[in-house]
Picture 1 (cartoon, protein in one colour):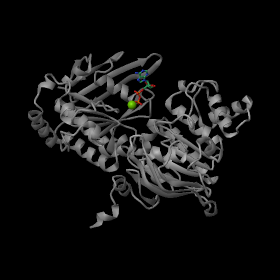
Picture 2 (tube, protein in one colour):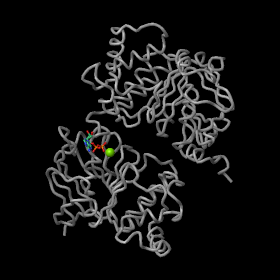
Picture 3 (cartoon, helix red, strand yellow):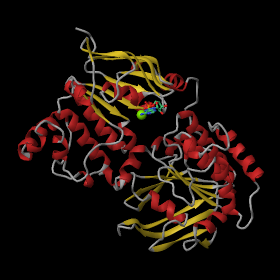
Picture 4 (cartoon, helix red, strand yellow):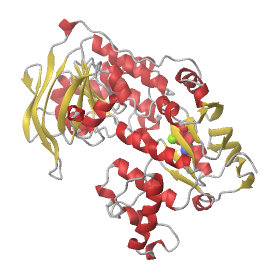
Length: 507
Ligand code: ADP
Ligand code: MG
């Protein structure tokens, strides 16, 4: 018998010229929580997709309890007791939790839901999963969907669970409950591999951690014998400071630049996306916006930028109402917006155009009627590339051909190149690795000290707490309150994100 459940030995995998995994070895002990840590693109998902039978390795072997195994499909891996919960869930929206759990099982459709419910319930109770079995997936929160995915895997008898960035989409409270479930699984003898790029989570939940860098396994460490500084250095390949600085700004720079009053916005489906929202943003300030995804972040950005119509309320910029203006006039007033997940045309980038042309496009929007000199455009594009460290063959490269992180840098770089007075930025570091993220924080701080007012829609509470001056928490399109970033806590923010008043807790 091997002392390891699973051994991956010298695994290599290429996609065309990209070597996603180079001779990676990794072993998982029974009852161990093993973190897989690495920057974006370091090969984590590829390695786990190999272990779960989605890809076959070019080289290397997998051993299970000491015996070599070959997985030709996910069902081979599942049969061997390995289950993976992917970053993007694969549930069927119109089906209930039970139906999704049974889906794909031999005879799955013929199993009586009532009968199955009992056995599912037994598994759920064993690990402390809370699940409403009759609820349809489309009615579920992200965290409930994740629970169904985990349940699906456990119900198939998995004793080795792989989770690919499971916490990226959860609130702090939901993370606490997920970690509780993982600890229960561990004490029942399951092994868990958790992929993350959040260092505090590695420290909190894992027994050991393996750091990947550029497709190679750098080192496996016992978590209690390492710290965040060492892990970051291994992950990034060089020492890097983990501190996000909050720039100090002269108080005379701070005056109200944007006032949103009683703003209500309805979506196409008539749902209230913003519900009487009011707040003031000052120049020389970063106002963070925290909230569960889909709480009105997108509608707030788009309404200020003139891309969406309000049902009532007002948006006042430097004393003047802009609520009825079109996006082009709003841009000309010095307001720019970058919205990473679903950036729209008008404010966004044109994927089929080169970097230069995208920069010129923006300049044309700013200076109506004037044809922008291509030389000026080229200079600006070169400046942006240099300043943001954009990895591109040339200024003529079509934006679509850049990697995700580099597209983001072009987008934000182009906005800042316009010298805005009000910068709205949503999820600007999503998908960026640590080095590039810190680069963006520095740039936002620099803009702030120049007196720019910044509305920063974020998702990582640690980042919001250290970068922003104040944080507005939104829930179901409502402003739940604005707190001082220096004195509040993650727990308080988490409760407000769930629509609760944290001050009610003290009874
Ligand atoms: P991580 O999960 O650590 O972010 P991945 O394993 O997803 O990294 O990716 C590692 C590298 O392999 C990246 O450069 C990525 O672009 C590339 N890659 C991953 N999957 C594919 C694929 N199906 N086709 C082509 N390239 C891929
Ligand atoms: Mg991945």
